[in-house]
Image (tube, rainbow, N blue to C red; front, side, top):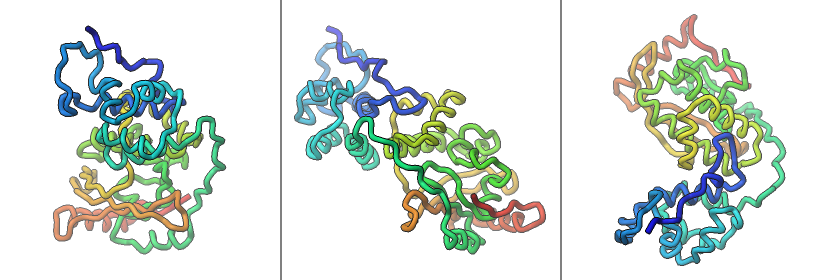
Length: 303
């Protein structure tokens, strides 16, 4: 007997932005990732038309009705108690970022009015801090990964942001659409997938942000990898990362990427790139900063 619990293509999220049923799309994607055998369901001889858990299996694990799962996935309801959402998250074995994203989606009311535009001005003292971080590449980013301000070291490491139109100063856009920026990554697919997960998380928080919707649409139109990874509904919040770059001036550098919140500007965060002490990457970074101080080095700037 064939499994009739196939996910309907009509309910999937279009890559250009929110489908109006992001919660259902996310649940279907995570259900498809869950191994039924590891979840304790033996092979019952029924042909599985799609990977992962059936709806009735998820309902069993979460102790909710199958009808409730159907209504969630079809967008006919999007709210549940904290206990029910926790049960679904446990059944799907969601990571902390995924669990937070599930709660974010469940708490956003359909048709909610758009928020007023957030002022993206960088505080003067934050600019001053950037300018004093001579030995550390650093930037101030908006939550959508727009580059608002940067120091000379960040420009030397990544790109001359001042040479770009303000609308193109976005790390995710550059990662996918700028060939030179893309070539900086030793492992571009990994870095690009992380970008998609960050963007998906932010889209869940601010579904009515026109700039974010436009960015998603542009990336979906221009990059097939983005379209594929966006449909996977992976999410990731801020965390410390280690990235390896292949720089045209100094070669390979492995750097820790650390993010710091800005209490006075909650939509912004400070990002700093550091190398392990006495490492080859530390020496390469020191040479790069010396080069940046020369007449051909890039300038610090900010919008």
